[in-house]
Image 1: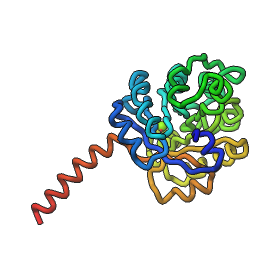
Image 2 (image 1 turned 30 degrees about the vertical axis):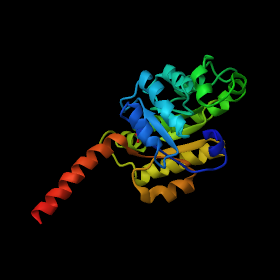
Image 3 (image 1 turned 180 degrees about the vertical axis):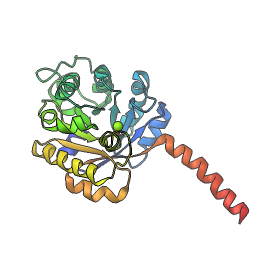
Image 4 (image 1 turned 90 degrees about the vertical axis):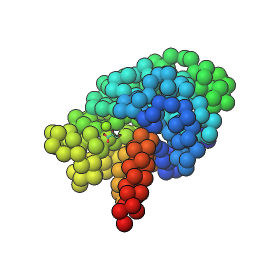
Length: 256
Ligand code: 3PY
Ligand code: MG
């Protein structure tokens, strides 16, 4: 089932950022209960080449590929879709102009200007060129990150951009910008209020919401706001945590 069909059906989905640009890591993440693995080319180590290589084992495991592109790398949005990504996330989208440029890279004509060449994607998804021609725009989801106060001020105009399918609230960056660099508090009441307002506007337009779930106890509130895509954990952090936990537990036993 395509990611868009699951979202349209109202499913709640879970994903994790992959920061280690290696197909084995992508393959292992895809064997977990996650619905989607999101290759991070903004803050993670992914590149055009690693996205090509890492998308394959994720799709082979029956999971959805997401890609977060670096700021303004609209060309990488097209590349990611061409190798099988179903959702692309553009960070720091603060104006409708940026949202429009991104959406045009994600969608074929008549909505956008994505160049035709999904030869790898259609084979990986078992689609004919005719099917991809008919379905490509619907199956290629453009999520813009709202993570500045300017983005929040422009939320109506950004959501009105044709081809924008959803918003991803960057609650860390948003809290940072809101306090002019003084604090990172993604769960502050002010950030939660903005999340709620943005999602109300998104849902009114039939658009989707994704969010970084740093504290599980906020899940219910986010669900009530209408978020459907939850991003949690980091492959790189898991490696570090495992080593540290092992040594801490062993030393505690030794000293006991
Ligand atoms: C943020 O919270 O700013 C993010 O970009 C989440 O990944
Ligand atoms: Mg961010």
